[in-house]
Image 1 (tube, rainbow, N blue to C red):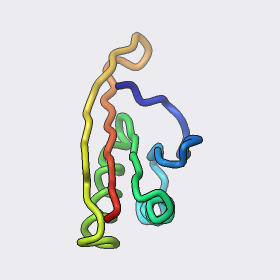
Image 2 (image 1 turned 60 degrees about the vertical axis):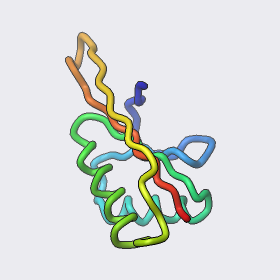
Image 3 (image 1 turned 90 degrees about the vertical axis):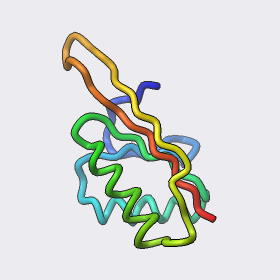
Length: 97
C-alpha cells in the first residue's frame, strides 16, 4: 500500500480523501458531507498528517455520527525513499450505517 503525496483532495471515485494539515474540524465536516453521500470514505494520510486522520475519524464516529458510523478498517504501512527516508502512511475506512 502506497499513499500518494498530494494536497487535500478527493479522488475520482469520491470515496477517498487525502488528509493534509488543514484545520481538523473543517476537514471533518468535508469528510462528513462526502460520507453522507457515499456511505463509505477512505481517509488517507502520510507522515505528520497521520494524527489528523485519526482525529478526523474519531470526531466523525464518536461525535458527529455516534452510533450511525464506524471505523471498518485501518491499514498502516511505511515506505522508504532515498529523498525522504522512511515515511509512514495510513488508510482509515469509515462506514455510515
